[in-house]
Length: 241
Image (tube, rainbow, N blue to C red):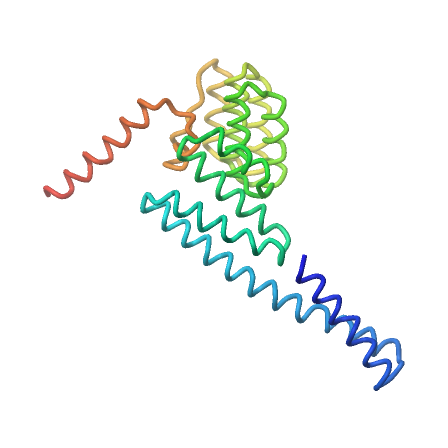
């Protein structure tokens, strides 16, 4: 990363100049070297991350305005910041993959999601679901294990994992994942409800997670259309009042 190279160069140069022109005292030289490394490093990180955050916000607004292609194009331009800061490329790949996934361009989304940021549990869950849809159960499990490991306190990631496990016939393992999530999320009521449903031989209920659930495209298309129609009807009624 360029910020690391620049910071190390400045640190080394500062130490050499102090030793040559000021003092050869090791504690002083070390102090100058450390300060000369961290000051530019932190400054570069802040500048780069502000640019990346602005890019992410702009892409989010484009997505909300149904300009997904524009959002993806902007994000791709931001890949240049990856040479300056660790994990920037991975975060951008996660965003691009998530946008493509939400558009139902699953095949196109997967390569981006695979290169995404492991701590982005949403994109990791999307990747896991994509593997499930392709009947790649082993990869699905590996991906969800990573998602859960990096987002231990997020109830929905456990629910999505369990939902997919139940889909592939692993009901007992699904119950085990939900029980694990229950301990990590301060006894989340939605997880408890789904444990009881699976133990009773019934299907999980995910609507308790709100609209976020629908972006994962695990609901049947008809149910999603019905929900959207209901929302539009409700808005019309509010306008009439």
